[in-house]
Amino acid sequence: MSAARTLRVPGRHGYAAEFSPYLPGRLACAAAQHYGIAGCGTLLILDHSESGLRIFRSFDWNDGLFDVTWSENNEHVLVTCSGDGSMQLWDTAKAAGPLQVYKEHTQEVYSVDWSQTRGEQLVVSGSWDQTVKVWDPTVEKSLCTFRGHESVIYSTIWSPHIPGCFASASGDQTLRIWDMKATGVRIVIPAHQTEILSCDWCKYNENLLVTGAVDCSLRGWDLRNVRQPVFELLGHTYAIRRVKFSPFHASVLASCSYDFTVRFWNFSKPDPLLETVEHHTEFTCGLDFSLQSPTQVADCSWDETIKIYDPACLTIPA
Image (tube, rainbow, N blue to C red; front, side, top):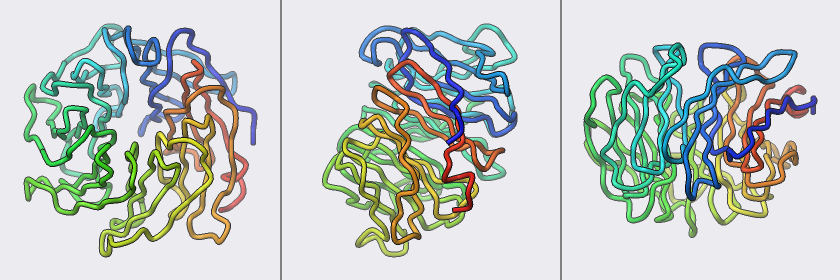
């Protein structure tokens, strides 16, 4: 693996990292003081170059920030979500913020995602109040609220293929597929027998999702037949906090965990574990693949560091 470029942010524990879909080398990180249990939050906008990682801008919020998503129609705009039940819209071209605050959830908002299909600019949010909400960021109030989960919601992700369709993962041990047009749940998958902390859609197959759970396993789900997983990936030794499919390889994904590691997998191989990266000393919560560089990954951890690196397994063809 190439040497990681590291930025240490004292007193800030990283929860989410997301590469800009527009600007190569620009990264957003959502972080919290005191491990997110108390204190404020910070949104960090980083630029990385050959000389390393530097902070381009940082914004503070009065509660911990747990997730971040970039706008898909404005390179300067992002949305974060926080422990006070609110979401914030920021503009990196402005030194102060936020431009807008959305406050409807009644408990922590743990997940936000900006839609990727053309023709709609929508944000989905998932909260510990057991609801999912969909927002038009130009409107102060949510467009609709989706109920059905029976525990906290940890992860909400738009389908990159099907407009108005998103997935959610919950402490109720289910993965659910929702449709804006149907205004309700389309599919309920009892995906694990423990809390599910993360899910993601395959970028190359509209029917394939992956879940990561407290049982240390990753499971792949084909929406055409959800009776059993199409793959299971074992190796993590503590709960899986986040999972992401590669934007460049149809069968490659990455996961990060409370075991401090980031693992890279190719689920189409008989021996699917490609690489284990052990460069953090605390829970690793944030993880993303670069959309511009096929080999580049970013992560962040409760050890107060954000890292950008090129894992060896991505520099050789998967």
